[in-house]
Length: 525
Image (cartoon, rainbow, N blue to C red; front, side, top):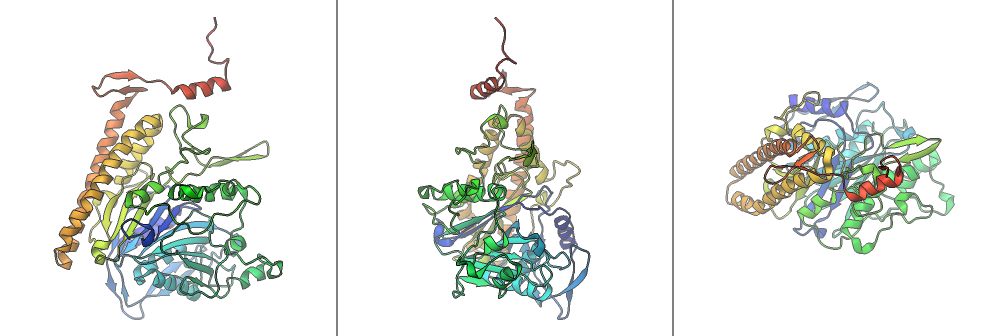
């Protein structure tokens, strides 16, 4: 219970507002017939990964919840709850992610108790499949009300992937919502903007929705049924603006363009160009995606596009894609903003859930977990029935640096790399690639060993393996930080023989600098 309370205190005290990126890949779109769910939690906070054991409860027990306005509520308990890892995945290979789209703020009822993170946790505790999770979440808000702003939830199990979008009713209780199943062989992504537009009203196998989803929009004036236009959830409840699209749909575009380059997705929509075609909800990737392909999709600063954050004068002399917050500003009544990339230093943690229906749950479900920026993190496997969590990922204080904390080890390396990003990120990603490739190569062997054991011994083997790999990753990143400080010191770079070398700015950046200020640096004749 202590761990649960600590988790809730940490999460509710540092909610990442209007951030995060998700990807869903169906088993028919993956190379290993696994369903994948990717969740980046882009909040600047130190996350303590924990495990909650399965438990039985007395009938009549209740859970205490507070609304954002401070009102107290009791939520009914169920007879049995599942074991869960963090708030990523449960023992039945059910995984959940989210991104906040805010939407119509007049519909946000802060007097109601259940926030989006409450719904995610309760669904993992109470459901075994994605469809069951949708039922748990929507029945809870029907009974107790929804106390968060607009939210997109990724929900997946070894057989299905669903996108559920939900927003409040502005004081009427419950919520409005719609859920769509991702067709097998397809994938989708979302990033702080509601993605479900028009949806079928008579296909319960593939689309579910609340009874009030259209009527509330009509009542509030968000949709006119006499307009001749079909009802679209996202236009009604999360109307776009150019600023909003640039911040959100650019990430979806970049995921789609790299998963399916043959489809030549236009940047016009995320640049807010009037009349531009919206990105389709589901796409078929050009090739079936392997695990490391999925890792790669969340490592992106728009490299190689007109929006490349590693290029141009704003990236400095060493191609640093990171921009300080806030991302937008105003000068002389004109608005400007930096790009919002998928990879950001604000990320607290991310995971890639791999769910396989052809293996027992204790082997088939893995949360590939990493802390800090997706571009410089290293994913290691945590099996869904593990009974312990690797210690470096359970500790740390955001106010006190500690080499014993994995979060701090990764943050140290990534932050120091900003001094000379173009060079140091290569060293970081070399180690990242080596370790992730090692884990992927070892996966078949360790899982075959587990298959030869009984249920309890399998769990013990996989728990021990995951914990050793987590400790190994942490130690490698501590040593990487030491290496970076030693090699890149006082503006110099040590070569392979540890000889100090001068290495100036790239020629193309110096040329841009001179173009901006030609006289400032000129030496006279």
